[in-house]
Amino acid sequence: MTARREHSGKADPRDLPIYAISQAARYLRLPQTTLRSWILGRRFPRLDGTGFSEPLIQKPDPSDERLSFTNLIEAHVLHALRVKHGIAMKAVREALDYAQREFHIDRLLVRQELRAAPGELFLSEYGRLLSLSPAGQFAMERVLEAYLERVARDTEGLPFRLYPFTSPDASKDQRVVAIDPRISFGRPVIARKGISTSILAERLNAGETVRELAYDYDLDEEEVAEAIIYERAA
Image 1: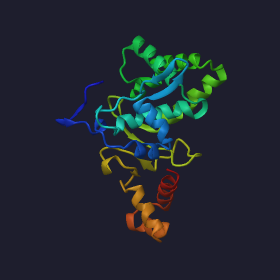
Image 2 (image 1 turned 90 degrees about the horizontal axis):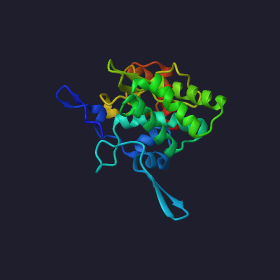
Image 3 (image 1 turned 30 degrees about the vertical axis):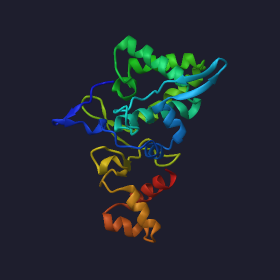
Image 4 (image 1 turned 90 degrees about the vertical axis):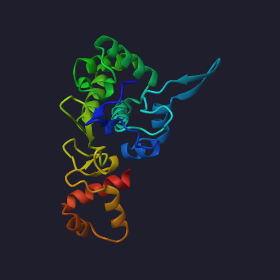
């Protein structure tokens, strides 16, 4: 595992275990069983007994099931590979290993290089292992690009903020809800103000209106509506 990054003399908040699997799955709109298999591995039947598929994502603490923000980004990227074509864990692992051997880049799923030659090599190998047609390969690349557009990166090219999809038809330009490990303990918030989306949903459920919430928190009504849509869908 890559050594934990340091942030102003302290452990980088991006690498701290803060998300339960159920919580991370809800934020990313993933089935819990799917995310659990990516984190903990999965047993499967074989003719000669039971096989085991190794995890795709390394937790920061092997003794703690919780995920870090960096893990959240890895799961977000893996989700993109699952949208159109499902996800073959063995094929993902082999394609990652192949690209990393060629370019010596650790944890390619969270690196900026995923959008350059190493990423192209990874996708090409993954598509080959899945026997995708050129059209299928192109579609997968387009979906992955849309997911990568939701990740904000620092000057080193590493993720520091995720803008999750708020609805199935959300355009890639929407940046209303954000997940940032430095804000509200990494819970989803209104990006512009840092207001918790769950608080807005709770107050709406208690009988307040979108207009009242927008006034109280100095938000646009569209921001409140987007937060509510996200919370109800998550």
